Image (cartoon, rainbow, N blue to C red; front, side):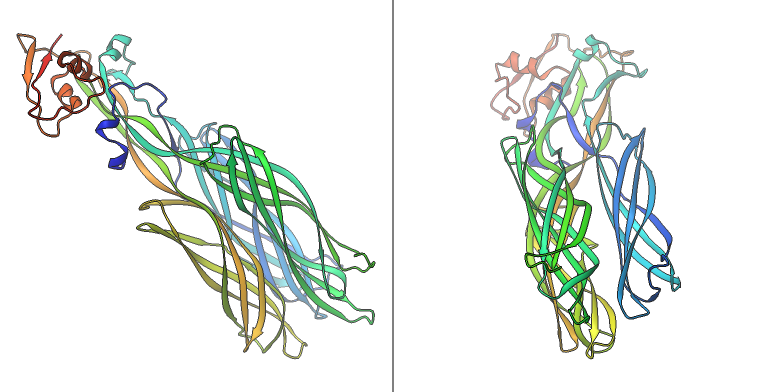
Length: 534
């Protein structure tokens, strides 16, 4: 429903001037895809002794519409870390493709469709030391919005369009409805090259990597958008010393990208949300200035998709009648959205990760990801909460055994919202950076920084008049013999209410009584209105 402050007597007029367009959300709900496959280790890789870590990252490769059906094509990027029979940490990567379709009523070419995906419950099971089965659920959240013309159709009872003369007899009362409009922009194909220097022995192989990219700042200036994206990497590698001894090492680094892009029709006070994705990642070992293999060279491409949100007041018809014919109104609900909050925050989180196996000696590698986040409104604030899913690779106290430990650490962020939020729609990007772990008292002390880029919309069911139906077979009959009546306005009655009661135009009442053209209320007891019938 519309808030009382958004649709008032003072904001109404009696004619619809066109341009009545609201963005409507067409679909509510998620789509779940079961993705599974098998992987056989090539002969040159040692067989699996124990699985240490399983990561599943969903990627949307294509998105297209056909009629009222949207089809999504993508793949799950699997990264598996395991311990081989000779006690070394190895890894492999593989992909499993998926395709899913969803029927959305009234989907059209003007739709903007956002897709957020998450891989849930990834499982890797050994069928043999060199063969394993992979399975996960890919949760797809679709948000399609489209501009909808909400100007009501004027028709007759036999469902044909009314004539121009019949349309002229219709009086419409409009009010301003505040809802969100959406604009989009892209910055694709940003190529980057970076180096990471390590401080331990020379690197002989890179075992695995994890990367994240998140928008950390965005502001509009005129019709230009200046933004900053931070790309972070966590890399596990193996080093070798001159005497042939080997050791494991890990390093973290993040690199900022600052860009300016053209954004026609954007205003300075518009809210901007962005999603960043790293593609075409190339990683190799390089040499530093002294000629030692202590350099990790990165080449990658970053794509960023932006969505702008701005609340605007749009006129919608809230009542109508004909001065000539009996009138019937057809109504329908439109699922609009109102922008409540867009922000980018970062904060530190600390916690203890219990170790349930052996006595931990050293943390070899520590990764953290946020898969699910809950957003809830509470009066004039909103709360974002979730868990950081942690995966640690450790050696025991004697350094003879390598094992894995998983767990989670909760976090919560509270922010101020612009008024009460009811049913909300959210888009959130999360990144965990500067993750540090050290052994304390048989547990792992974890310190990290969490980055959140989020957008919160309130879902509003807007009642609309979709059609004004005239009974042209039975025109109204005037019963007044003298062609005029005197009327004493009552408390709370508007000019529109009186006009509808006597089936005359509000402008005719104003003109015959010398009222201001914008007058909507006549205080009771101050004036007797003369209502003339033509």
